[in-house]
Length: 87
Image 1 (cartoon, helix red, strand yellow):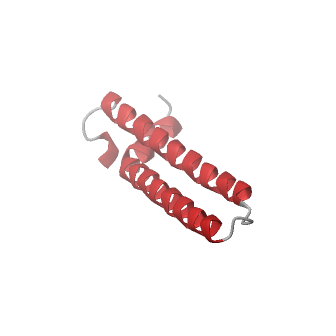
Image 2 (cartoon, one colour; image 1 turned 90 degrees about the vertical axis):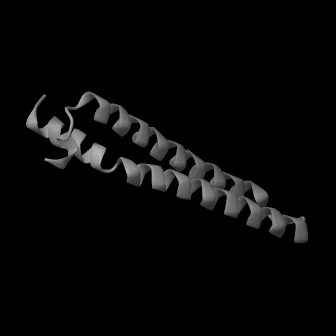
């Protein structure tokens, strides 16, 4: 493994908790937006829900990507020698 690749792997391992936190935060934000948009639509049936649904979908896709990064970082941590992330 080249030094550049090793630095990349170490950085990903160190950030795995950040990836998980961002994923959970994305789910919470998407749920909040969905509830808010549903309430707005309920008050005014003419409220354009379509574009807002796209925003919720994009937030959910971002949360999914953060979860994927967390899982990759966890897998890389299992492949690296013990204590590799601390160097």
